Amino acid sequence: MKLINKPIHLALLISLFIYSTGCRSSRPSANANKDTLLPTLPELPLDSLLTHIMAAQNIQLLSMKGEIEYENKNENLDAKISLYSMKDSFCLLILKKLGIEVSRILITKDSIQIIDRLNQEYITGIYNNLIAYYQVPFPFYAIHDILTNVCFFSEDILYQSSIKENNYIIKGFTETQACECKIHGRTLKPLSFSLNTQAYAMNIQSEERSQILWNAIPTKMKISIHEKLNPQEALLDIHIHWTDIKFEIPKTIKFNIPDHYLKRSK
Image 1 (tube, rainbow, N blue to C red):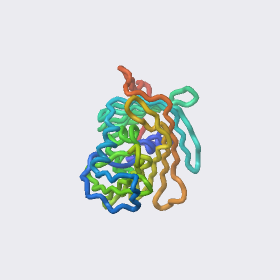
Image 2 (cartoon, rainbow, N blue to C red; image 1 turned 180 degrees about the horizontal axis):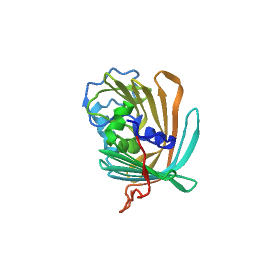
Image 3 (cartoon, rainbow, N blue to C red; image 1 turned 60 degrees about the horizontal axis):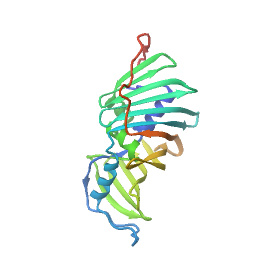
Image 4 (cartoon, rainbow, N blue to C red; image 1 turned 120 degrees about the vertical axis):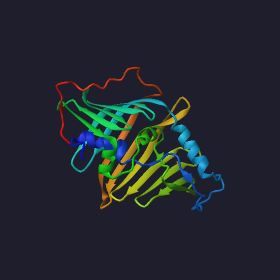
């Protein structure tokens, strides 16, 4: 069931949760053999690495404002983006172009709703149906985890850790996907995250972070998505730059579908 047929909606959802990947809690395994073990970089157990990463993701409320730019072989578009997220509850995104609101997207554990201001239409759907359509395992909690620390971890994947080029590496595999997280050897902050499924290959890079209270939040991220059948040509390149980040949300967040808007058929 296809929920979206407007380019800006498709690109935003792909950027935030369809092709993004990773892991939350995990069943640790013994560390894999080190590719390159430098004396200056201490060996850390897999459990310690995961605990450190997930502690940085334990932010209950998040407000972010900035810019998003995406391009594929047919177009290059940009928009202002505002995001409000409550961990394990909801995520609201607002897109504006030239100061005019283009769309408003509300994602919860069970549903996704999109208000299309330009065409005065709205879309409603079941979150799990959207994930099933794209055949990419992406649980709802992953949105918040990626925003706060680039990656996420899954209970269903067995992970291994290693050391390579003075960075820690966490890899996970299943029959249908493989993921890898590259972690800075000193700060223990994820530098990049990659996911390969049967259909797609995706890479997320943290290009810049800013210290917000006790946490260093990614402020610049690059996401590249490729079809497995055509790995040389990017299906989508996305750049997100957050310029305003707060660990709070407004007391009232509006998501009202006007009565005269038409429901778009799926």
